[in-house]
Amino acid sequence: MAEKINDGGPAFPCEIGTTSKGMTLRDYFAGQAISQIIATCANDTTYGMTKADYFAGRAYEIADAMLKARGQQ
Image (cartoon, rainbow, N blue to C red; front, side, top):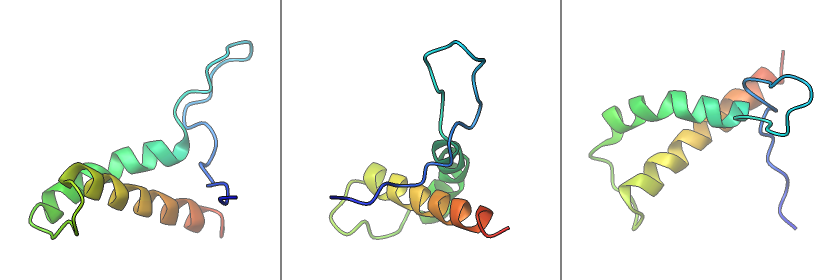
């Protein structure tokens, strides 16, 4: 069984009584990172992946590192 990924919980918590949990903090961090990744890594080798998969993977690597650093406070 795969290890559960720490998603940081809701980035923008919703009011009590709603069914939507909204975007996770992990998704938010990845979204914040991706534009810079695209700008700096546009010419990187993608190792057989599409550019979109490559960029998304890098964004989530950064998001995971940010969550890990955040937990070390």
